[in-house]
Image (cartoon, rainbow, N blue to C red; front, top):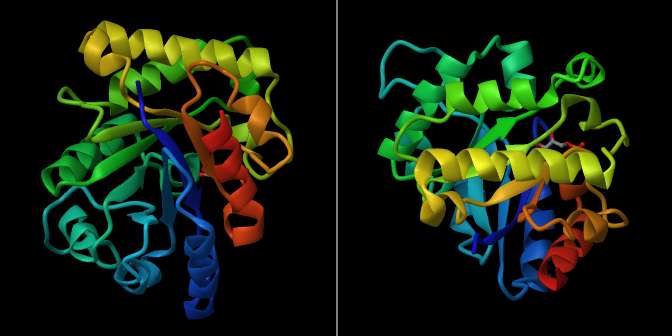
Length: 247
Ligand code: 13P
């Protein structure tokens, strides 16, 4: 069985005072059987990890290179050095705003693994792809291109995030979520064999809130969520964690 994971992506939100929300969240956790991960901005990785709470900490990106002349970037080893255990890679906002290709993401996955991090690899189709009936082709190509050989349930989590559902309040139908997650599970089993392929956690992301989380978690191959806006406040995120624990 894959682990149940509730991950919060704070994106470019939060200064030091946001750590109060982390402390509030830590006060109402752990929830049995759920791994909770918060991915704050890079500036907060050190103080967030230093809290040493039951909440795991993750970064939102890392560079593929070990070190060198890459102004403004941070390496996977630097992320690990903060005490973080996870890194989000291939988020659609980075694929879009920073032109990251599947090959770029693939190289970052290698770097993350080499640093001992668990990568949360994001995949998802645009609205135009969805409307044209290309969702599984697009997501399948992203998976093939950005997931290197060597993925294990310990070093990799997948997050399906339809771009049109991110920050829009639009959530796919349950059938649409099930279709993509079942497809991703089959792809993983095909590539990695049943044991590993069935044990990698598959998260859904895109407008997950306290009032829709329980339904989303009913799907067999949805093992958790990658949450943006609703992860910023402990009061909004805690019900999502509870819904996952109860699923
Ligand atoms: P929202 O939950 O705000 O839609 O964001 C989802 C997301 O992009 C998480 O990585």
